[in-house]
Image (cartoon, rainbow, N blue to C red):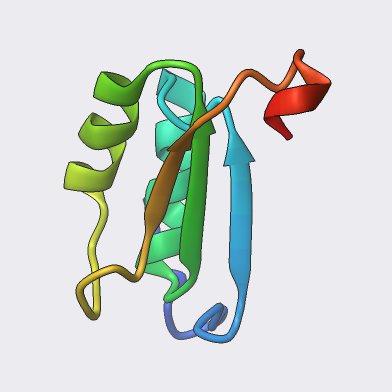
Length: 77
């Protein structure tokens, strides 16, 4: 992949990624974090959330957060 950090700066942005524990969600989070953004990772599987969090570059502790949620359940939102 090309280095996009000189073109795009997301340091003042936050992304909420549903399905952030899945393969595609992990890649969205990784790219967003590499460009300086914060990620809020939503998934129904805590182990997958933790795996995503462990893959992300972090400028400071707690920059990215994960929450177990079922987006199909209105009471979880």
